[in-house]
Image (cartoon, rainbow, N blue to C red):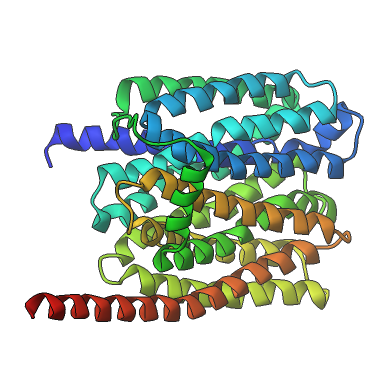
Length: 416
């Protein structure tokens, strides 16, 4: 690969990474501002948390909307539409005078921003060979992981020094830069298909074909349930660190950044591991290690041993495993699909975010003024993902055996 090609690929992965990072950036940047938002809108922190839940709901269902649109109109036109909606909704959040307004427009903000997540995964499948997908997803996570390192710290300082509303003004500027990058640097990876039907029955039939694929189902649900542990942490960490352990907004931002460094480091180690090991092997060992850490986390909460530094270390190790799980599970989920990558990406994203939203809500529902709701849900996620993976592998092997027998029967008949 010559210098020009490397530079082109660098910009391509950078833009795809930024598109993927819109969701995490929109979440992480305003987490430290929860107490300030509650005070500014005359409400409670628990009520402000509903704006996080509404964001999760919007980002979940929005992905199902964009899958068919990306197949019908190509990749870039839906991107422009969604990101424009995101910018307008961010403006409404910045000027919101009530928590109800904030909750509604956070939903619309998510509905617009999730197009980046769907389009980026589909374009990886469009533009790169299947064997390189896991490595590309790991590289994208390098860009994505910068968000939770920088965003909470930046959000904490902005909220403390300028006010929480400026967080949303910054997000508007970021989206403007991303739209410019799409226009100038991102190629159209799939031409519009006017023959693609947008009728509900046809769309649902397309999704049904995808979900019935054993490989897609097993790795998507394994990755989604494991990744939901991250959303449990995101939802519960503001209370755990700022209320239980009494750290400041700025210190919470730094803790969030340190923990996120584990995710970014592991995602890059994953690329090295892929040179020696298969994705399936990496997923198996990552789930095993994460399960052990999850049990330790919940045990410290149950037996009253929770304290600031041990919690940071255990959460750090827990999220390191996500750097190995997410890229490999995503690559294996998308591998069977070429022409239908947009819908496969949308369905995978919907499942991931729906499970994430559910686990995030569970942390709030189980709230008992301790660390147990967060750590308990995190442990539940990783142990459940391990169970899905171990049972799912048997389903994949059985489906492959049936397909092989059918293929041999057809070949035998053709030779008669």
